[in-house]
Length: 565
Image (cartoon, rainbow, N blue to C red; front, top):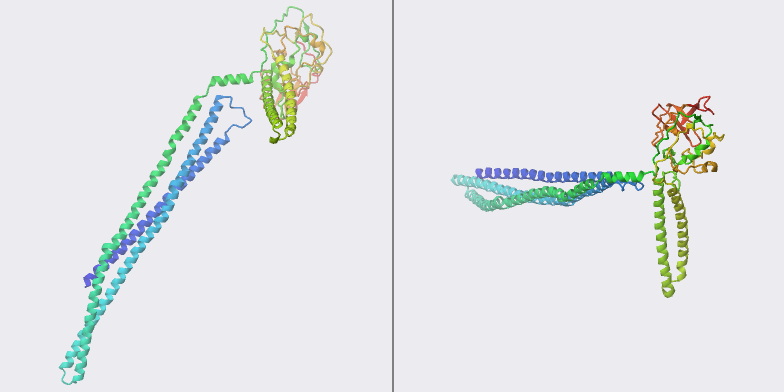
């Protein structure tokens, strides 16, 4: 009996240990699933953040509406790359979405089911364990009762035998002892029967517990654990498949970027640049030979403010349109002129033509609307039940006014275009140019008109078409309308003073010179009313700076001085 008791206790203890180990292991498995779910969630957040950053980057470098970059192949290639990059970001967003829906959501739901199933299995196991333990305790009680009753029966039997042997004891006492012994024997017999019956019952329960109930519970826990492991494998496979699914589209995006790069045509772009910035000015002609062997009449320097200009300068009437003066136009910080007069002739012509085309399109739209409304009115006239014919008259009147305004606008721009095309140089023999510092003996003596009277207050600071008719009548037919700047470009002009830059000036335009704040320079030509002063840094660096950016200190003899060579 003691051996059976010890073996049973050992089995119960081992069972308890196995349940504890299984409980720890299955809990660790659930924790691992939750850990993997958290890992996938963080990966999806990384994908979303990466996609968001890629989209923001693509949006940041998208061309602005005001930028005219689409005419260059390399710009279009970059814009196409940005669009492909945007699609590339969309694929990473798809990865995140698929991970959330196919892995995170599924594992979260499965984890809850797994916890519930695990709880059920271990609850059944503990319940079965409690039942077997309760049966064992009941068996122990029956066994102790049987043992106690047997001992009591033995003592009662011994007492009866003692009483029966004693001659001094009355017959009644002996009979009482005999009955007591019989009762104890009967109780022991009943306890034995009860113990035997319950022992059989316990053995059956124990057999069912260890060979049926517990194995079934362990089998369910094993199946549950195997399902968890298989689900982990499926999730890992899905994790890889989600990335693999987007690889073809990613490849297409990269192929699109490569094709965009291959579409770049450098020669086409360079031709486009030439076409865009072609000014339309005629190249300068050959410099006329000056014969120093003949008697020359000295003339004043053009750089002097009070110097007079000879009459024979009339053979160069179009100084204001010299191409070297266009870069000196001041940058207009406000809106540009409506007639695009701030641009060189060729660019101005293109802008005017584009404006005329836009107006023509607007006129055509208005005319199409007018025709449509006219047809509608005719339908209303024929079928009054469909509408009132007079209801479209206000709109027709408005469209007529719009067309008139647009036509007036078109005529205005066509006039400017005709003016530009009339002044555009024609391919011909190279023009001849003469020196401004020397005139021949046959030249007319210089007049007393100051050069500032012939100069119009334009940003170029040059002669314009509005010069005096006396000068216009002296234009020589062989001189083209656009000529080079004065010979001041070839001759080193004398300094007439100094200046100090009070503001920095970058000088991006051709013909200007960049200065830094506080820099000292030489003045070689004073402001002639156009807002620009010509300065020199050294023998090779000279150009124009805004007069308002410098503080000028002229020499005492610079005013009205006449320079001779």
